[in-house]
Image (cartoon, rainbow, N blue to C red):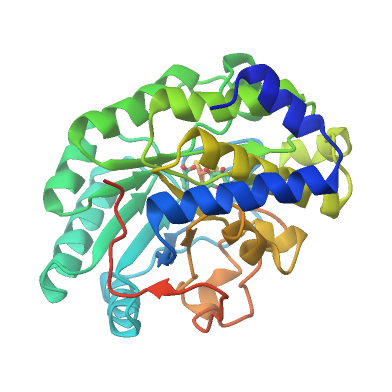
Length: 336
Ligand code: SAH
Ligand code: SF4
């Protein structure tokens, strides 16, 4: 178990030998606690409509440059059936944030239908932003059992550098939403972005320790990648690391440190890593990560789900993945 000082020391250490030692240790810890196999979650980005205005994200409501969509129930079910047939035991339904009744009921209906056709075999993770407790319960009772909600950054003052300060964006609401998800009984995932403008190494250490404090079941964290139609784009030169290779090292360090801090959780090798290194996801899986999220969003709509610039998988067919690790097919891959 690392202290805050030790984490900061690792994050600032420039030795490649130390990094590979840290990563191989983390890999060993992962295999001991979560097994050899990689778990899969098929990602379905079912809507890019969003009521929020996060300063970093291309889906923010003020971006009029994106054409908005929501998949029909049939289209989502078709993706879910495809996942089921390939043997991806679990799917993630991700979207922009909406809190209107029409949207809430739509998601409930889709969850129930997926549970019905798969005879409860397909695991469902949601990532649809902040909702009230009643909505989270409705979706849980319909059959969703996991939820992903990143806190984005653990310090309140940093949070408001990334979000407008209004009723849609409240630091305490975000943190309380994560706690509510846990209380209801969801396997709860959270995480943060790193290499944000004006970020200090200490912030990353605090983010990692905050995940431990929240005691989450899974983590997805990834590099901030500027999107040209967002306010934060203006600050893109204020990031600490400019070289992709340095950002990749930070990614591996963060994953490996977290695996030391939380041996039993699921850690995703996130899509954004692929933007900075074409072997990024594989390297992460050899450094403590154990979950991969192949994108199953229909090809024609993927380019509209543009959270950041140069998002991978927009053209590639990511169904076909070849990895140097065994893959757990037809499993939910929950933590104990
Ligand atoms: N609307 C939901 C889920 C979709 S966004 C939510 O916000 O929770 C999913 C994640 O994309 C966010 O949590 C954020 O961490 C990440 N993201 C958004 N913009 C990004 C950017 N420019 N670079 C890297 N990650 C980004
Ligand atoms: Fe909407 Fe999520 Fe993007 Fe924020 S990060 S603008 S909530 S899609």
